[in-house]
Length: 230
Image 1: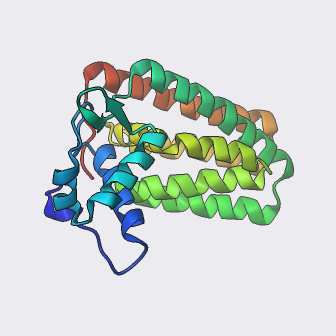
Image 2: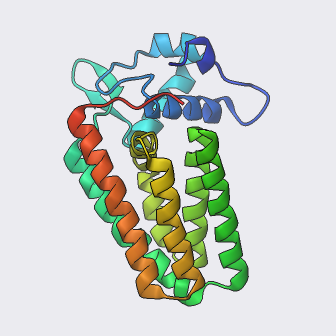
Image 3: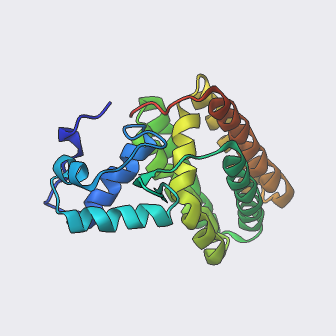
């Protein structure tokens, strides 16, 4: 579990607002702040070592991402992600990612496929090293490339609008027992279908991958499991 000191931002790069946003987003993903927990501005200023105006901006941004919600007489709290909301997110993912994989199999250049293979290899390496933060970063990079190589920039915009909640769910699923091996096999099926230029197989493999993580997330949510800090 991160300490308050670990939340302090590095002022050497990016803006304080960007760094504070990243710290808060990850602190919610990894369970440092629990669902329903009040986010008190004064305490956050001390933990992040930034001004109250920055904290307010960050909380407003996190609310747009669905990670924070305002509750009457309490103020901002960590949003609770329900099983129904998770199911809807996965349904949207299956539709969009399946379509992106299908389209990519049809039209991506050989160079684009090589980039996707490289990006997936990087994700699996992060998995092997147990670096869940890098798994999130590299998985996002893979899907961004998949959508853009398919020419579906608007589809990626939709995914990005959900990405904070998608990664909150990913933190729950990637730490599940045996998930490293399962994920590698599922992604290998997607890559192989893309290489074979098989649109139907690419779509099916992508959607089966999403359905599998949806089942894992549903189980974890039923158990009330907290994400493990990474």
